[in-house]
Every structure is written in structure tokens, then in C-alpha cells.
Image (cartoon, rainbow over all chains, first blue to last red; front, side, top):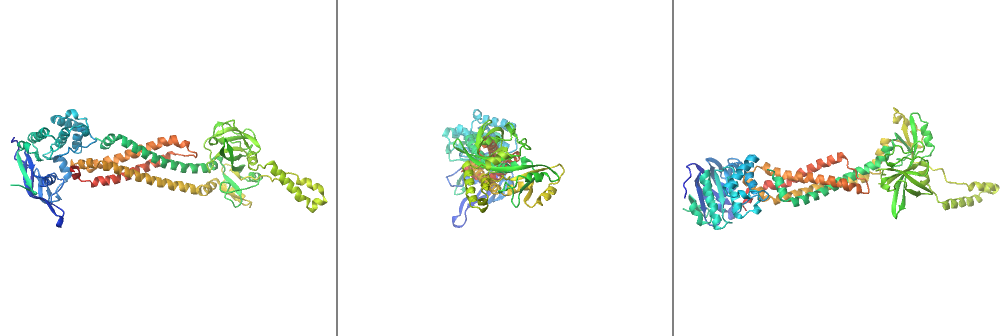
Length: 232
Length: 398
């Protein structure tokens, strides 16, 4: 385990609860979840399907607000229950990078353009975004596939491009939801190591939802969820 | 980075086919507008070109373009004598149908008041105006009668000496110009047998008259031609410079046997009468087609947006502002409309001249349709934009 995190909090959640439906159809997906993640820290979020991992991740990712509880990113309160305390989309663009089970690349853009778009929607110019996108692809070992569309890339290459896109705006938070599910064990480990490397080198807080227990040694911290709450 | 172009390039074949389809649809809209314009232009062409200030027609009628009008040929001399009149010409105009190579040949025949009018005002595309007072014809190209062609009409044969282009009657028939005398001969041609039968009938009736019984030589009169002197449709008057048409019209109206219209009045009568229904029908059909084009474009853009829903959700997830997504859909709508409009224009320029009736595409109409297409494109994109705005970033995760 590499201890390269700082004491600065990147993510802080307090009492996050998410309830779907109401009355007889009410389902509590997440109960009173509190967590702190420092910059540079790599966190594994474990647990069986339906335990609330993805619900937690989408709440922290400002996609699916909680029913109650607060979310703070780098000390800024952004969600108080469902109440938005800032422009979530803009905040997401500047501070959060996402990687998902499926690579989720835009099919009509090339690998380098998929990375560039994240920067361009954040106001970066075309030339500068291209230079940084190429640097990131090179850093992740897929620079030679820069001009290929996603359909021409392998699953591992697509995931690397997705990681490059997540890193594009120097996010302080990277959220990954089962990023290795579609990869073989060797590729899966490479991706996990990549997250650790990125977290430590770029001082980003990384939360990875995973079922893969073989790569747990790369994480600084592990949380396990069950029935919507952290297991003690 | 232009996402609209990137997406189009990724699905180029589908976009190209869609655009061609929209282009063909817009070509039909453009064509309907052209037919509408052509009908109006053809209807008023003659009135505009003959350059008459006043039209003197049979009393109580709306003139030769609206109904049958008959005035005596000597009316031209009466009109000529009115102060302020520069020239007065006979107007003879009728449509005939003959057969040529087994196909019906409809000709709108107009008489030129020889020798005052030899057709010098006709815009000739080939040949010359009339140089003889008989048996020469200037024909429109749409009749497909080449220069030098000889055609038998009535008892005489006419030679095509000149050609005009786009000289069409309000009914869509090509026009031919001969002298008034020839036009009347064509119109009132009576077969020899009909003349003989009429003469025999008159002789038979005369034999029973008391006067003929008392004076048998009168029977000779009955053998003389009894066909009345033909009448003309109207008299066209051109005024001297500076003369007010209303003043001359007032004098002529006082005669009691005629009605007078100004050129504008005659034009308006024609547009409100003969071509009014077809004009309105085409106009309504054009509006209907425009609405259909808008609906089809909206559905196409909606489908194109649906195909990109996942990408749109992903863009929202990575924080793309709405303007990026709106811009992508709107630009695609404008490209679809713009390229479709271009295809419609280019194809129309090649296809419309093959139509049997004139399809007149004016710059004004092209500009107007361009603005309509712009409006349609923006309106049509609203459905796709509405769908895109409803997409949640969560959908990128599914």
C-alpha cells in the first residue's frame, strides 16, 4: 500500500440516506452513510449487489442526490439532501471524473476527442486540450490508438481512454463503478494500479466500487457496504 | 470540436440519405410554389406584354379572358377617333385543338392587328416577327413546332417563322400568333359542305316567300355568302403620353355598347376569376406540404436525437453545459435543412423545366422558402431538444 495521501479532505459525506418510492413501495437504498476521503487516497468500496454501493457513488458524484445527508467536495458543501447548494453540472465538470463498468465513450468521437471533449466543455481551447489529451493517452499507454473510434479499441484500451477522460480536468475526485468488470484479471489489475498511480501522483481522491478481491492490495482504504450502510 | 459534424461523419451514409429525402420533399414544396407562380405569370403574361392601357370589351362582360366577348371590328376605328388615343388594335384570341403525330395539340391563337402590329413586341428566341399579312405564324417553343414547320389550320397552311419562349395561355397551352384576319379565318372556318347546305336551305326558304314569287331574280341574292362579318374579342387601346386612362375610359363607356377596363382592372379580373381557384388550391397544397415537411423533419431530428441519447447523457455526466447539447442538435437541424434546401434547388433547376407547365422559381420565392426552411429546421429541432433536455445523466450509467 502506498501512503501518499494528504490530510486535505476531498470528499466528506455525513448521514447520507437514499429512499426510493414511498409507503408500501418504499426502498431504502442507503442509510446514514458517513465517509471521509483525503486527496491522494484510494478507496475500495466493496459489497454484494444491491448493497447501495452505486447509490452512494452516484450521490457523491452529484448525479443522484440523497434523500437526506450532506455531501462536501474539497470543503465545499454541494448537496444538502436533495437541495443543490451549487450548480452541480458545473461542479461535476470541474472537480469530478467518472469511470464506469462499460467504458462509456462517445461512439462518434475518436479516443483523443473523447478526452478532449471533457476539457472543451470546461472551456479549454482545442489546441491545448489536444496536447493534454495526447499526454494523458500517452501516460495511460494508448497514445497509438488516439485516432481510433471506441468501436476499434479493445475493452482495456477503452477503459484507459475513459480513465484519461476522467483525469482530463485535474479532478480532485475520481469515481469508478466496477471499472474492471469487463476486463480479464491481468487487465483488471493494471487498471486498479493505474487508479492508485493517478491518485498518488495527481493527488486525487479515488473511490472504486469493485467485486474484485484480488486487487485489494492497491487500495489505501476499504469500505464494505451491506443493506445500504457500511459494515463495521 | 464540432459534435454535430463529428456525429454526421460517423453516420454519413444515413445522414446523406436522410438529407436527400428531405431535399426531395423540399423540392416538391419549391415546385408547388413554382407552379403557383407559373400559373399567375402565365395568366397575366399576355395582358402585361401586349401593353394596352385600356381594354374595350362587349357591354356587360368581363372581357375576353373571363368569358365570351364580341365587339364589331369597326370599334377599332371608333376608338381610334377618341381624343388621347394613340393606337387601337383588334384583339382576337381563341384556343384550338388539333392532332399532331397522334397527340393532341392545343394552341392558343392570338391575332395581331396587321399592319399596325406585326409582333415586334414578342420576345423571340429564334426566327423573326410576321412579314406577311397571311399564312405566317410565330409559335411558342412549348408547341414543339420548329422554325419552317408548316401546319394546316382551317383551309390554309401556316409557316412558323418565329419562336417565343414561355408564352403560355392561362390554361397552360402554348400560344401562336398570326394576323387578325388569319386568326378569324381559323376561328370561323366553315367547311364547304356546310356553306352549300346553308345556301340550299336559304334558297328553299326563299322560294316560299311572296316577294320572291313576285320577283324571281331575288333568288340570286339567297345564293350569295350569308356568313356575317366576324367579330373580334376586344379592342386594345394605347393612350398618348400623359393622357389619363380614366378620362378616355369615361368617353368610351358613354357609347353604351361596350365596357372599358384598364390593364390593371383586366389583370385583376383575370386573377380573381379564371385562375383564382387553381391559385388558391395550389397555395393551400403548398402550405400543407410545408407543414408535412416540418413534421417529417421534426421526426427525423427526434430520431437522430434518440440515437444519441446515451451520448447526450454522457455529455451531461461529464458536465457539458446545455448549450453544447442544444448546439449539436440545432446545428444538425440546420445542416439537414440547409443541405436539403440546396439539393432541392439544384435538382429543381434540372427537373422543373421538364414539367409540362411552367414552374417559375423566382429569387424572391427561393429566399422566402430558404427562410421557411430555416424556421422549420429550428422548430423541428425543438422536439429533439426537448427530449435531450429530459435525459438524465443517470442514463449514461445504464
